[in-house]
Length: 212
Image 1 (cartoon, rainbow, N blue to C red):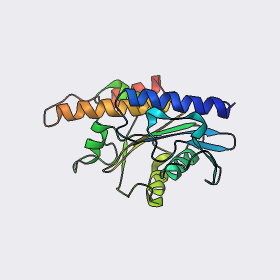
Image 2 (cartoon, rainbow, N blue to C red; image 1 turned 90 degrees about the horizontal axis):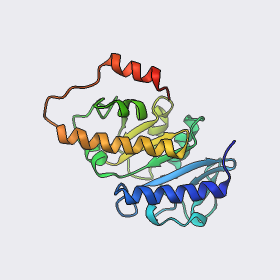
Image 3 (cartoon, one colour; image 1 turned 180 degrees about the vertical axis):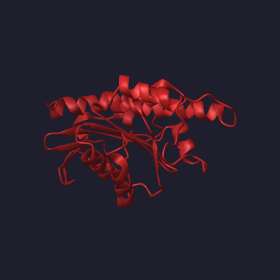
Image 4 (spheres, helix red, strand yellow; image 1 turned 30 degrees about the vertical axis):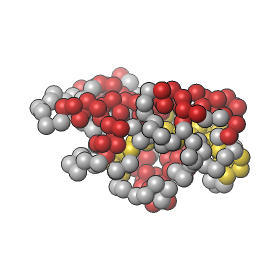
């Protein structure tokens, strides 16, 4: 059963504050959404995640029509499309976190998995991070590009932009996107050096022991 709209609003505001306190949301960047019975809640445009007023969080119906709260993020349709492709998930988080954005600007990343399997927790919480081609923020083609891969990927990296992660709960989505940022930081620290990656056998074992 879905949580109440009031509780969802409070959860989004609290999680936005935590992400901001962790330094993952510079300026008024990033957005959070949660599925509710009537549609989704999504953070408003131009509002800092660390200073969200629960009552002003935007509400969209199932078709994406704005029905309550402040004007929604320009990337609200990205959230709608990702949740539509992942019916068992209830939340999406998109950040402009520094290290993940830096990786999204590199020309030599693997599009099938933008970050290598450096740690068990990356494999467990992210899986494979699919890189999505660049489109301007708010461009409907960006939402379509995410929708095309979202059924098979709980997280994507928008080129020259930043990470997006969904989860069965808001906590799970945040855990995934925080793991992306930490792995991106490790990747950049190790860039150009020989590293030991987890083997396919080790990754398969993790997926068996800790299924999504």
